Image (cartoon, rainbow, N blue to C red; front, side):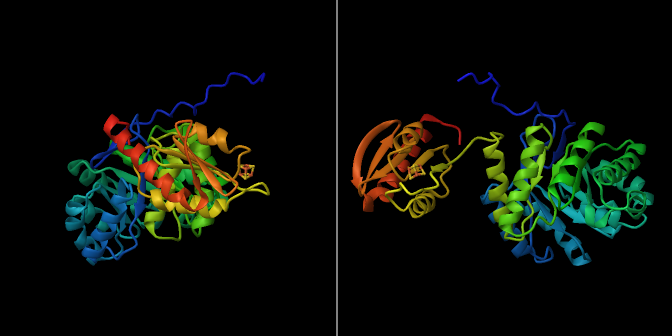
Length: 371
Ligand code: SF4
């Protein structure tokens, strides 16, 4: 149709140095990883490990735990040892917990220089301890706790202020020849955040941890994060992500994974291609899509299932998918790999789709389709 022949791919990934967060490589050519943070009291070891297990099961690759008290610091050795995924200790205010976390065997430590008084004086010791234990440091700058000096210089948390704060802290570590660092510069405004990361990406080669901080409740936070991460990742910027939601952390992982899948940065799993419905629909598309999604929840194979409300786009989309239904006249035409395999009454659509999906999934697993 006269469309230019544009290659359908994202910009080349920015070349960052690679660091090792426990068993997970971050940066370089390592796949973009997904993180979350526990909401339990870290000192409650059982509850924290339970939540980490749930996060791990939902696809979380790195988990962060808060460490505001000595009791939390005391819990770190057991949590770091028993967690199935690398644990990062999140430290504000108290440098002594940075040392405790490193000693505890945490896979990394996040520090917020804006929130640790006399942080600059401690860098030498932190760099030494971290190097001795092979522990990377995340310099995590937050708009809400920006270094006072930079707030005065810029008036507010601008992209330049955020980037300068992070690069300043990194330079203090560099003075001690420590570069086992990743950086985040979070802001609740996706536009400020995107620009801050663009500046950082230009000025350093450290791996970048993306996050829109205080992004809000699930709906708003999901959109803010998807927009911001989508912009940056499509420019090749970002090595690990955390979606911040005022919602259970497992939801953050679902959103993070979906963002990466949508950008083609990790293999797609189940994908429901359902139409928005319109005045032509001959079936309750919302209900049908919801029931099919719920019935196939947890499926790991890259199955594309089309749920279409009528025969206008229905057969076309259903044919493009591994499996699909096009509804009409109180019936559903069930397609598998482009062929109508049967026509069933409306009441049987969901169970037939689920049945066929399980058959295809089993075959895919046998054929070794990567999940
Ligand atoms: Fe409307 Fe049919 Fe398109 Fe669904 S598939 S949006 S019902 S035209």
